[in-house]
Amino acid sequence: MENIQPGTPTSCLAEDEIDLIELVQKFWKERKFILKVCGIGLVIGLVIAFSIPKEYKTEVKLAPENTSATKVGQLGGLAAMAGINLNNAANSGDALLPELYPDIVQSTPFLLELINIPVETKEGCLKVKFFDYIRHYQHDAWWNYIVSAPVQALRWIISHFKEEDTQSAGELNSFKLTKDQEKFIFFLRKKITVNVDKKTGVISASVWMQDPLVSATVMDIVLSKLQSYITDYRTRKAKHDLAFSEKLFIEAKDNYYKAQKAYAQYVDENHNVISASFRTEEERLRNEMNLAYGVYNQMAQQLEMNKVKVQEQTPVYTVIEPARVAIKAAKPNKAMLLMGIVFLSIFISVAWILGGERIKTIMKI
Image (cartoon, rainbow, N blue to C red; front, side):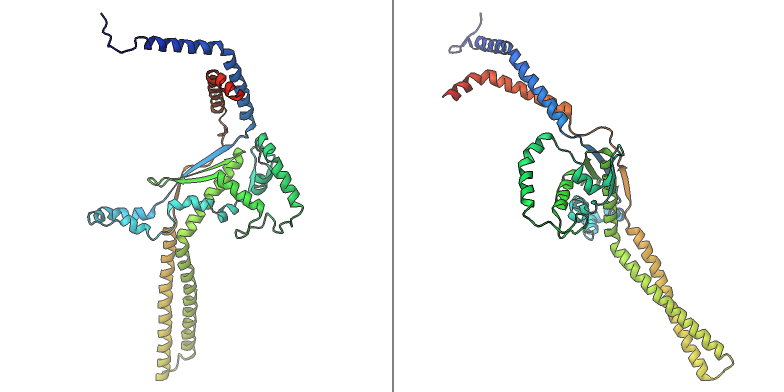
């Protein structure tokens, strides 16, 4: 005999089953409506998917040499036992941390250097400057043209009452940009991204463009300019010291040659003279020559040391993933877009079946 507790409704399970069955039957009756809504959503999804321009992604990965970590690593264990963090001490002298690389690429002077680089489309039918490619050969979805038409018309009317900008688009002045240059910078900041893995130090950079060859070309140039920027920063002090030592070396060399020539000329002119004044003058010229030679020899050694220092300060980069021309477009993902719109259509149709009558009643009121 079943044990039924007092006060427990015995028909709850049956009512739930009946409600579920009725709900399934209701959906089955409206199956044509659901299929119709899904069909309309599928058509809309296809229109949207094929209206969005394709974009190709070029991604590279770069591992810069961590010279400070290499130097500190040998004494890191002993320093850690003494409670000293040599990594922070080594990095404190370098203001250009890897975390700043994204800001460097996103900076206005860096992006302005990309204006005049030549680009070519994959088909080879278009060879223009990058600025002209961004300005004239980028495509938008058709609804963007409809939405922006009133704004463009208003700008066209206003442009007739404003003075034209005398600065041409080709003139690079980060202090004063033209409107087209500002649009160019704003566009690139959305299409070029750089990320740094704080654990491994690996630099990941990506470029999104509507042509795969243009994307790969821009990525390769961005990577090259970033490497040059970092190298120039890290070797700037060493190169300054090298240039200064070269200047001192040339001066010391000239002084030594002059002293040597003066000594030889004096000895040749007075080789038969045995007076004390001759020996005194000869000794003075010899000492000046030896002194000039000492300075010249010291400057030569300093010059070689500074050359080695420049080489030591020059960072070495390991390209883990080089830039290459993409075969397939990364955007839009048509399959995911269609699936999302179909699921949204199913949700809308189900919601209408469940609450459509109530919505109609509210609208009548």
